[in-house]
Length: 193
Image 1 (cartoon, rainbow, N blue to C red):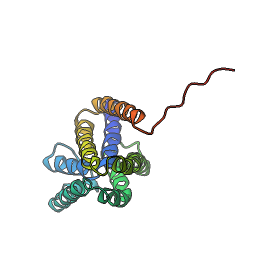
Image 2 (tube, rainbow, N blue to C red; image 1 turned 30 degrees about the vertical axis):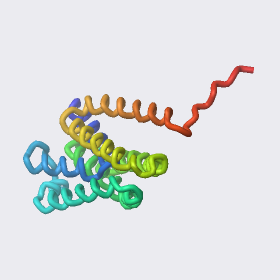
Image 3 (tube, one colour; image 1 turned 90 degrees about the vertical axis):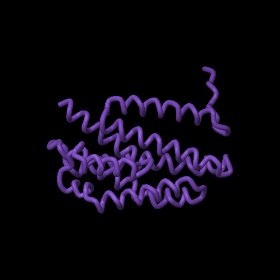
Image 4 (tube, rainbow, N blue to C red; image 1 turned 180 degrees about the vertical axis):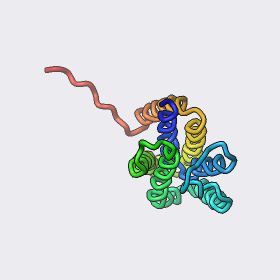
């Protein structure tokens, strides 16, 4: 029972991390599957092949570089609108593949929705960051997103319960940061009549 809960939490974490950077959690799962730390059932074990790992690594380098360049990062987000949710769906299904009670279609849908939600938030916020910082904020925010994706991926694989706490803290600080951002107003309390 606890193993199933941990697997589902891990699946949500990996698909959420894919919403920030599709290739960080995908490469981690592929390499850990190749080394035997993770067990990927067929057909997901194709990720552990040498060519798949090499291809994912190349795409990761491209993603990391392009996402740091203002304007190019927006074009990248448009392209990634299809890749990140698909990767999230794949990771969710691969992680929950050992749980026989979860239909693969449900796992794919949950992973897709999770990654799409995270990606949508990222894609909506990035143009605001670029506009308010004249593009200088893009590499900083991108590096923070990559860092969050790396930490979330590691915690999702090894400490899924701690990952939930980590993500709650990240969400708290992101919401707090945006409430303090210039141009964001909080409605004044209304007086009862």
